[in-house]
Image 1 (cartoon, helix red, strand yellow):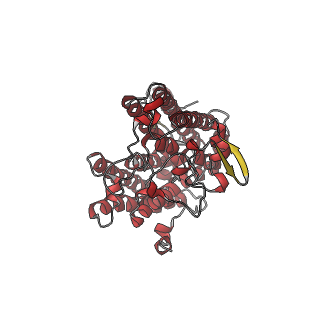
Image 2: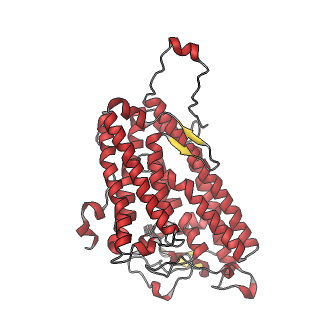
Image 3: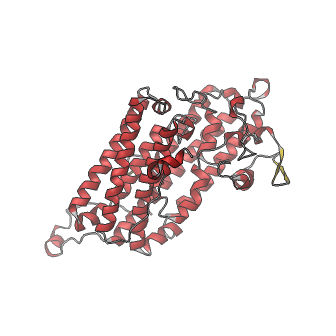
Length: 420
């Protein structure tokens, strides 16, 4: 169920005798759950469209159908990235998130990679290439991977041997299968997997096209089922919804924790400043498709959505309602005005990166050592995100809530440790 606040003047007579009451924490967290419900429903809808496009590619391999599958993947990222603001404060989301959006990944676990990829001392499975390996040994036991199924991916391959880099499921596994490795370094250009990697018979390139197609479809099925699970958690009676509405103060804490942790440690730190410090395009969030500029932008939009109590659905419908901003404005208007301005500034800084990338200055290039323009763009957004995090802390204090320890990042808190 998705609730909307509807402005109306129809009850004018009632308004003369009954003052409009300001929304309280209970209404704010209920509307927060409504936005989560809508965001995950949109993520599920676009994942289903992606799965259809993957089926079309497998049924009739062609450049046109590969392009259609890639476009569907890109479209699916728009609503999903906005849901990342529901992480950190909601344990049910955090416990689940790695299934659908874990990164970076050792892609050699899944499929063939360039000879320059090399072996990994930390991860013996980094070059397993399960698509070319129907049987292999894992933790001393032989695994029969003759049939590539969602169960094989989620139950055996995902984080195999307890290694986080063994990402076998989710958006980025599908991204790798659609684009292949990006071998351009800090030059422009995304991955360039040929459509013939999914072709039949003698037209097949890369070997094992039937198994690659099977993996692609299984990963698509798994993404849909995982999003079905999370979408259900935010509907009426869902566990995630009940957790926030049953204790409004804890719900407010969840909202602010998600905003601050995504803003500071995750986006500003791990996803942006760390990659810049290392000049490493492998640290890009959507590294195979060169879609990182969009991922960062919609993360920023998602943070602002939570504070303002707004979300624009994929069909253009705008959902608005009681918000954190309303509560903070009642307690300390100056903090509210400052935070709203800073949220707008961070979204604008992220949009500057997005615009530059769309005009031909790829995020890869921004990360190149000595690229002053790229560093200025990225650090402009990093600094804006760090600045707004301080105001999120002020909002916590204004509401009289307990201090929140937001997620951190060595790139921000202890830069020297990054190179140790």
